[in-house]
Image (cartoon, rainbow, N blue to C red; front, side, top):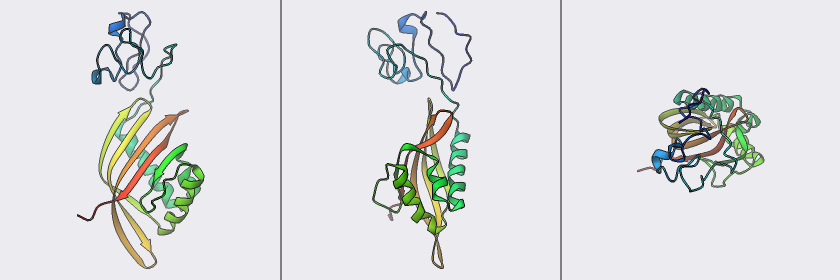
Length: 186
């Protein structure tokens, strides 16, 4: 097997065309087997996520700390009261399944419309629990959070569940999927 002089990125190793077919395992190969690896070719089966020319994908570093920073960035955007700033954190094809609306938001215009109304409540989010899953140019942060919201003279805390899925696109981490729902009462 030929060893690459390229640096390791996000725990992956680069595939070399000189590797024996069965040794060309991917990060996801432990979830499959040597014959059906997720990236690269493991045998005579085709890979499921690599173009025919087997171009190599560079994975941006993803960490739990990054998940915390991305949430803090989103929460700080809420504090500006500017729906456009919050919306800018979502990918153009991002999906928002919001807490206080039963309408899925699948475009920047729809996402911004939701936040224009939600920001009227001066929301401030606090993470209670979090579970972070890391991938190649993808990060999933799921858990529970509490929002302090203001309705007129009343301020209340609203516990909710959340999932943020981020993708690194052109060097920028964007929200591609965000689901939030209030906690069940029982």
